[in-house]
Image 1 (cartoon, rainbow, N blue to C red):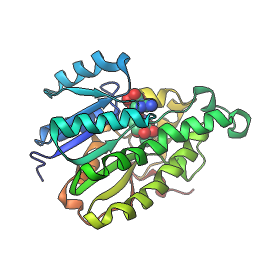
Image 2: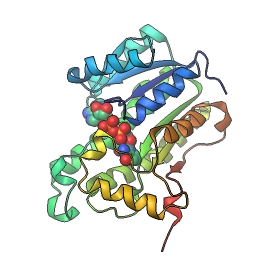
Image 3: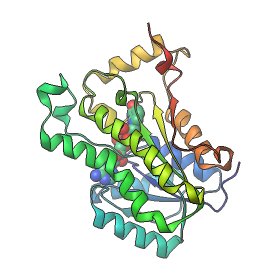
Image 4: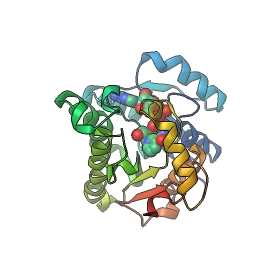
Length: 256
Ligand code: NAD
């Protein structure tokens, strides 16, 4: 299904390996109006270059998703430049690097816990809250999660707890917005070597384990994830909301 003329905000592009890069690509290829925000000034030139590479001819907006003021400015600017949104892709996460190694209890701190939850979970709710009245009927909100939310993944630690919070917020946001047929879902992706993933100690080993143990014996690509996100933005998923959908070659079904 074509998304011609649909306004979709894509957050979280940092490199051509970013999951949101592949999402922006598939959206653009299917005629959506891709609107991009990036974290900070340091990323600006890189993001503009990537958009150029994708032939996406648009201005991009700087927005630190841990700032309500930043999100409010983003909403005002997008509203003026593009009108209402039909979709929001939340593809951002952060936890201090020293929290993504060793045993959870040994390395967690109050500050690290709060930061991980603020950037990786609350920012999705903050976007929904800010854009609530600037969403068209039947808009679709999608966030990215990981299996570390409900199973122990060594070194993922506080990020797993933040992803559990994120997945739970998907339920409550779906309930909050459903009366306007607005849908809210998460895609739980298998491991992909991106900048964010590189911060997790022992990440390469996770890639090997997935390839070995998943029913489909392969690793996941950003395109695999982007296709499901596309489905969730399209009308083909009009009755799907409040879900966390795994795109992981089936890894999550395997016990022993
Ligand atoms: P990535 O490093 O390419 O993207 C992460 C993005 O988060 C970056 O663009 C970064 O700028 C942004 N970000 C961090 N803090 C921010 C802030 N305060 N404000 C705005 N943006 C901020 O990595 P990715 O793997 O594409 O990550 C995208 C999402 O996918 C994340 O939520 C991640 O947890 C999730 N995910 C990744 C994997 C994986 O293995 N790569 C698996 C499952 C889920």
